[in-house]
Image (cartoon, rainbow, N blue to C red; front, side, top):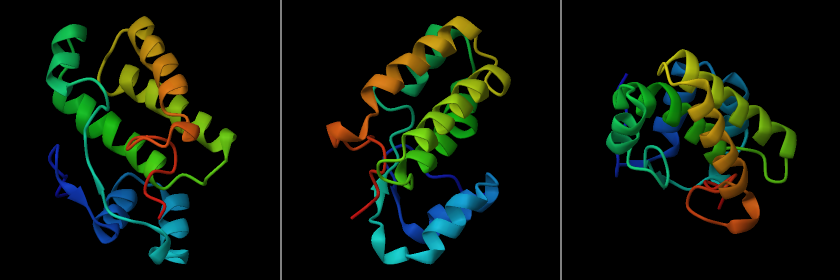
Length: 136
């Protein structure tokens, strides 16, 4: 799989391929149903915290954090259904679980990151990493 590097623009077609790779079938269906509803976006890794710094801070492999945890989480956020709080919470819980199981992060650190995402990723902020950010 050709993963985007931090700073790369992710076009809708590449996002579809990534969603298939991560087995995010519900997102594949959503995107395919209305490709024109989505804009390209810039992959920023773990939003608000530099991935390498996060790796040093936690003692975890930053590559695993970036590509096994943050990228699938970003896909969930980019193509999340606007206003769907349950879906957003499910995506955040999966991210927390991935940090623990795939990046081998300590549970208390993953929990702290989860809490930060719950506050900072809210759609109401309209930031480049807020819920449903790939919607036009």
